Amino acid sequence: MNQSSESLDAVVVGAGAAGLAAGYQLNRTGQRFEILEAGPRVGESWRHRWESLRLFTPAQHDALPGLTYPAARNTYPGKNDFADYLESYVAHFGLPVRTGIRVEAVASAGDEFALSTSKGSVRAANVIVATGANALPRIPATAVGLEPAIRQLHSSNYRGPDDVPDGEVLVVGAGTSGSEIALELSATHRVLLSGRPTPHIPDLLLRYAGGVYWSFLHSVLTLRTPVGRKVASEFHKRGAPLIRISPKDLDAAGVVRVPRLSGTTGGRPMVDGGGPASVRTVIWATGYRPDLDWIEGLELTPWGWPETKRGVVPRIPGLYFVGMPFQYALTSGLIGGVGRDAAYVVRHLAGRTGAGSVVAAVPKAGNGDREDDGGGKPQHPGGGYPGT
Image 1: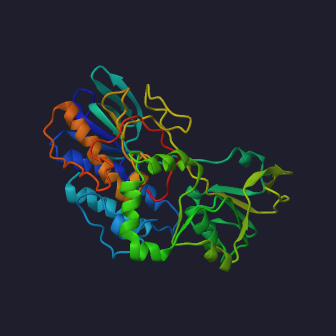
Image 2: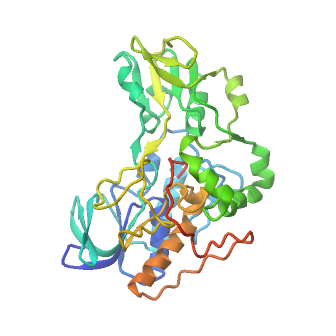
């Protein structure tokens, strides 16, 4: 670990997909940098998620820059397989990752930044924050009104059916995570699934027109297009589209779909238009919220995200983000989308420091969205997107 007596050109906070993509690009510039990861092992956050979890995007869209994902097209890798891929990515490119180091504070210190960590301090001319969209579980205030006898857990703490006691289960959140958990539990429990269903992407569309669909998400639904800006403005209000699983699958498995949770009465959960539900367990598949209070002087939107221009923080020169939801496109929060944003951020960083950069320019999209210059006004990204 470099101490404060020696300044790096850049520090990347987080060794998930976004942080490693940034590291790949920094490696090509010849700058001195380190990637600091709080976990004891690269990919640890993936390994701790529920056992049956698979990525929400097919293998052909799960690669980071420079290294193909080793799985057949149209298959969905398991969470441990992807964690192994992240480790192999670090080894393949020799990225300077330091595990077991939590960054506790970042503050401007003259022309550079001072980072306080769990293992000392470090100074850097630039900081790239790549801590992801899944920092802190988002649990509704309704949770405090449930009686103590009802077991509660967030989807981030769910591992499998053995975690859930006998009795009826209420899963709150009808996105892909909530739907997959509900479907898995339906084999051993009576399950209620609460929430407004999200759109379903048919398997045939992904299998036979997946390239076209990805191109639409990646190059049309961006902050450069009117339709992209409209989607971005509403992004935080809905869960991710259902992939691999459909409402018909839930119905066939006997999952009971109920309206949105409206509150509690007598310590029991209430749904819109219904009476209290006699459940033994509530699983909150309600997403996550960002955790950025440790960055001094960073102004946040009401949704908890920083205002950036495609990951560049205009008010704090040298501070960058990669992996934010809708940082530039709908795919910015997906594994296959972080590479483009990382390339943009590192080109900007290299230009700021005057370092020679070999980061390839992002080609202009055929639809004229001018991906190479990254847009004008700072954006206000919304909520999280699973599968990052």
